[in-house]
Length: 342
Image (tube, rainbow, N blue to C red; front, side, top):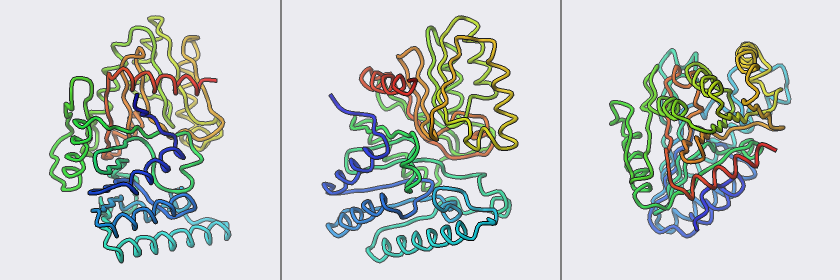
């Protein structure tokens, strides 16, 4: 039986192992990539692969230039230590990209900003995390930086040839800017790939989450760094009214998305909306949650890069998720979700 689910440390180990055995291609798409203790091993593996003649492509969103030590660094810090650390991290990452280019590794910075996006850089980003090595693909929530290994996150390894080929096709379409609309790709009977082009106000992935939660019969498990909002929250409350068991797994309460203004107001509203329903179980983990996973009736799953909130839809981010009814995959993801509830 294939192993599907990989935690951050498992993923980077497996990715490097596959890169070291690669014969043809290594294609990487991520929102940001910064050098660090963990990613240095990946850097070396990528260079080794290129020296063997493997085609190595790395596509990174422009916003990587605004990240340092796993945090978006757009406001001046009063801490000299932090300013120095962030400056050194960005410099080291630039040196990494230069080293890649010297070794003939193609590095492309996507989604170059317009004037508005330079002021509000979180708008219009490519939020996709997709890794392809020969006939193997991984999709999920992992960016590349040391901070990401401190979070609860997951990557799903796909070796189903129809799914992997669809992932290659979408990698090319997304990065050639040939997509005109959000769309769904039917890989096979059990798996559909969902792609958000990045049009503000619409998302085929979010619509799928609404569809799944609207027809739940027994239980819903929702894992994200954000609590459900808008129509998705309404669906969950309607399901709770019908006696369906809901589990919501998210970050610790002091995470900035729950403790800082204006996010704390959104969180307070969410708590107010669910407090009357004892069959809605809210689980705050003791660390940051970055996984994005929806499981309905332990029969259907939706996972990938989309946080499954209306905020992501409003910001117009490019996203990639997989909907699956594959029994082995659903079982493994369900067991993982249950392990997070304790």
